[in-house]
Length: 432
Image (cartoon, rainbow, N blue to C red; front, side, top):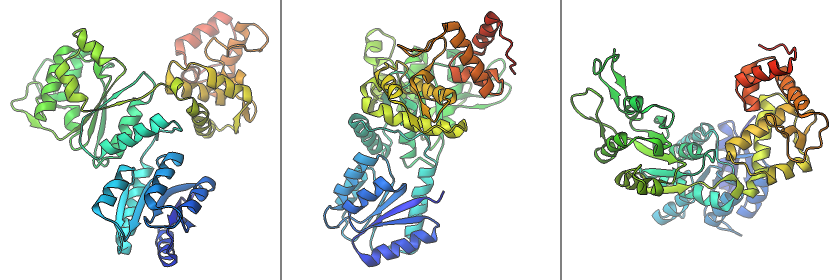
């Protein structure tokens, strides 16, 4: 599909010139004479990027950018103006504008800037989707801190999207073209985590048959994400503190430190203040990490995002699963909006994926949200629980062509659970 770029300028000649330049790049152009007209067109057109002037009738450019950000999220914006100052540039960049061009500018500089913005946007996967004011403000803060090299600490319950926010910061930073290296501190045993982070020299210990480059070195000039930093042992906390202070790493068995230029983002679902009081986390490391803290709220505190996220995931999985699903029934929406979602967005996404798979019509109903051996609360499905459970497993295996691994992932259970259920029920279901 050809992407559309919205051009907003009250000058007829400038609009025409921008239209010609953008169309030469094989993009579709949507024109607006002022911001009020532009806002209407964003609602009706599938816009991928905005190019806007600053000085316009009915609404100035800065006010337009703020309204567009609030209503339509993180659409990339290029500001062009002949009335700019350094203060204007700083002001619009605070609003999350991608680039700022002063008139007069060359055709080449315009097309290069557009190409750069679109390339960055195309590589931004898993954008944060929200209609919640707190999350919008959080994204604004994240966009602001992304322009610096400050260390960021992201707090929040499991499943709230901490890694997603970290990737958003990286993609919005000057380091976006450099590596983004994620390390799950909770998933790697302590005796291996040090070598994963800092690397080791050949022969430094039994089994070190060759040199290993650590994650900090691999992330040089880019960003390293230390996921679930609260799980790190006290010994490693001390070594990490030195890396943050000195900006250099010591490989295990190495003879001298290795300088690294790395932006550090850490995440945790723990209360680090409590961990400090209980002696499990170093206070000096906490202060090094929390230069710029950001806290994600749980999904239960974002009720306005439930339907928005549901529709997003529905569209995503309808394509992936080749299903003709176009919406949700009223009772399905009510079910989604009243459920607690302890696993937050991660649990929510999995539930929508299963519902898309199980739906037998173009509308997802409440009864499509059968999860594991449970059914949706107050379900009116007749028949025994075992029969319904077996029907669900059988239907999922049919839709995955008998692949137990895929079926287990969709149902949120282990392959062993499916195998045991089949044995318990004695059903002759062909599986791969």
